[in-house]
Image (tube, rainbow over the protein chains, first blue to last red):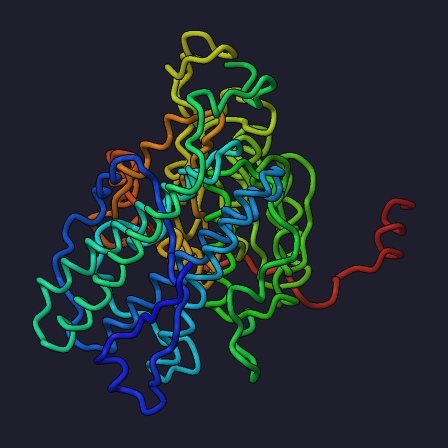
Amino acid sequence: MSPKTRTTSAAKAKTAQSAPTMRTKPKGAKQAASPAKPPRAARAAGKAPRTLDEFMREALVMEIDAAQRYTEFADAMETHNNLEVAALFRKMAGIEGKHAEQIMAEMGWTAMPPPAAGASWAGFEAPETAPGDEVHYLMQPYHALELALANEQRAERFFARLARAATTTTVRKAARELQEEEREHVELVRAWMKKVPKPDADWANDPDPPAYTD
Amino acid sequence: MKEAAARAPLTAQNYKSGYKPIWCPGCGDYSVLSSVTKALAMVQVPPEDVVVVSGIGCSSRIPAYTTCYGFHGVHGRALAAATGLKVARPDLTVLVAGGDGDGYSIGGNHFLHACRRNVDLTYIVMDNHVYGMTKGQPSPTTEPDWDSKLSPGGTGVRSFHPLVIALASGANFVARAFSGDPNGTAAIIAQAIRHPGFSFVEVLSPCVTFRPDQREWKEMAHPAPVTATDDPARAARRIMTDDGFNIGVLYAGKRKPYAAVTGKPRATVADLEAEFEQ
């Protein structure tokens, strides 16, 4: 992983201490599968935060939720003795957690700020959060990276949309910066995927499956 | 419920134990656990003032994954134990958790009467329409035409409708949530905890192992188009006619919670014994 910065210039300007923090990159990865259709729940989205503060609060929630989901996945994989994938998810959780810490520092927040009133994303969960059901106890590192790739791609699309919908220059600029960062993450995850073997077609075959009745 | 003490604000992490869940990867219950801890952080009740009571089943393992007091009890009897606890210790915040098999089948009778008594409890049912722990038998909420090797052609039995049953039985708060919406579920659970009386939260929580078809729920769940009502008749009409995927608080009533009788007993044991001797 190459270290990268993840700081919007607007956020840097906002806080005195805002020396750009270094962030280790690759946030998530996601599923190679085609992007999930947005749930009926949120098709209404189309708005954008009006202030930098609101924008960064949403970005913070995205990072925290993504980290939490990766942690859940890591715990589940450890429990099911899939330690290689567990370690990968744990690493992704750590990266997302660092991103959250960096946002807190950039914005000068010492405690979790109250959530913004209404999220800008479509669907129940933030765009960078992996769907909770897209894991399997026999999954392989390639699958985990597919999952992360899809998460990053959704995040990139989200920030691109926010940049288009923004009504202030500050928010538009910040959204463009984070969009670019997410695009870099996408490329990084793709590079990772070239380094791990692609699973065989029968990767999910289990001679003693839990659902033996089916 | 004790509101926030003068200490650092509690976070969801304060309510998570060091035990890792043993649910299947992809199970909706992971998100429900996360929602419960977030909800407790929202209401800021210290873990030592919270008790999580459960029955038997996959979802009933949840007390061990929290730092609260817990009672992983007898199949279907979580509500009975929790009712006794809350009446004896009204100062505690008591959550009850379980699944559809535990709560609506063997525990169905307790469910009805817990709603009727309206003791100040929050009952969270993780409903996956199947008995997962015992390998996929149909549960009370399983669709009548769900075909599997254990129920060839489906059971042909009408599904139990927990929300309307709860409402008709007297629950003071009725909501439906979805595990794919963990932050929304946390907000609903927090609201349920704060609402006086018996609060019932049905959480659609897919079983990816025995009901992989439930992955579609994330495409079907949607926020309820109307806000909660305190009119049970209106709530009943909404619940009976919705598509089963309306997410939100559907009823928030005004019934007075059950209060334990206090004061000195009017007769001593000796008085009672004396009556028998006459």
